[in-house]
Image 1 (spheres, rainbow, N blue to C red):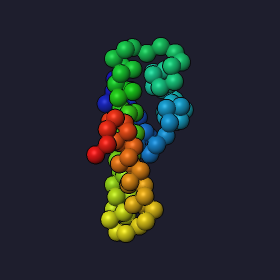
Image 2: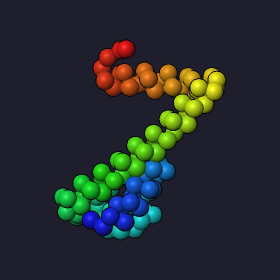
Image 3: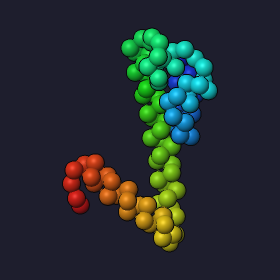
Image 4: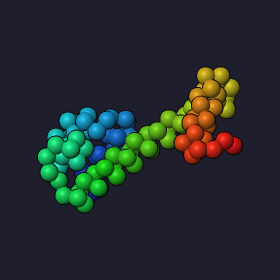
Length: 98
């Protein structure tokens, strides 16, 4: 799978395009097949495409969380509430309380 193509997938995912939107914007049959399940794509290519999308989604989410954290540290009550919710959600995902 072409590294530039994977970078494009990651970039679109980072701005929180969903899988179908990425497929539509890129209009590459292999990308569409991997992200939407329509059509055929090789196993290795599919894994690389899905990994690039996940990496992009997580990087975008991390940037948002960092921005919320900065606002919370600066005294924003709504950002502090969001941070507490994120902490609670992480604890639930891990199945424990801290």
